[in-house]
Length: 414
Figure 1: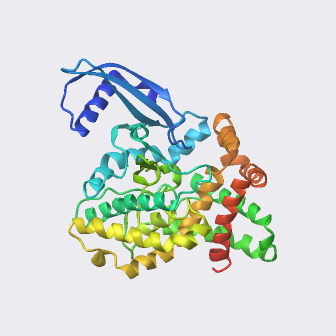
Figure 2: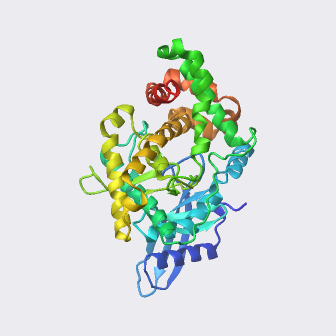
Figure 3: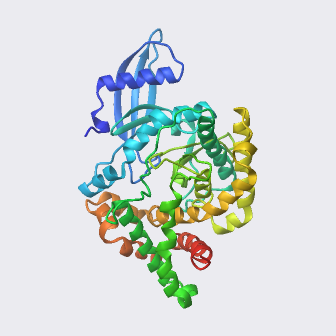
């Protein structure tokens, strides 16, 4: 299996040619040098290792060298269990497929949604470096985005969904996206099912510590996993609702914002990490992006207004392409789908945040130790998360906020 460190001179040549073409640059060039450097200040995750690729070019007719810096993402080098998890998950091949065959068509109908991809093979993706263009993540460790950031992100989300809808409305062929996050019709031993059920067991242990649920504890524990598991069915392409190509992993680290001179309100944003992309009702993405990086208090104050703004953005993109949203996604049908998929935002929040919200010292142990990944996903998840829940106030407060919303509205009222 090739790695980012094994790029050949011909690979670099092809990368730079693609860069010149996609940026409408016609000058001939000669590669002077190139080097790879690991980076920690770009968005990081459990599903990839990140590098900067620095390339120095000499352009024909220009004595001054030109320095290019790209962002590279490769399958992480880890222990066998980590690598097996990623290969079974199919995340790298899906993202390569998305950037090569899906995204160009979607962006042709709207605005830029994601960074330009200049190189892709079975184990490596190379992008324009958004960090050098002033983009950055918008949340702190709490993972919370503010109103302005969410408003900006909803425009990009509407562009993604509208591009897909326009593609369908014009009869263009759409590449199937196999569900890899919540697959149905797999044995109970499948690693995604096991991973999901382990997360549910973590939350049952959290619930046992909360005084407000003690008098209904047996009922909650009996029904919790069943209510969480509805996501496996709702993630499917719908037979009755409008479907679109979805990002399907919209938490704060996967959204990069570009700011103006005054550094207050974001000008635009880009989405990264399309490893879980699916074809399903747009409300699934929408409720995820409006739930994972928000608090219940924020949603009570602003959810309705932001839902209306997304629908407005969607209508504008469709109108520019000659379509009327009323004929494609009537407003009553839109809000009906929002009601159906509200549970999805909370399920996604709970499933991901017990891991991604862990204190940095815990995360470092998981990623630096040879057995850390295996410990979390196979052996010590409850122990690790309970320790964080009891010792870290931010982790506990964010988890309890999500958990109470889910239990109060979708377990006790089911």
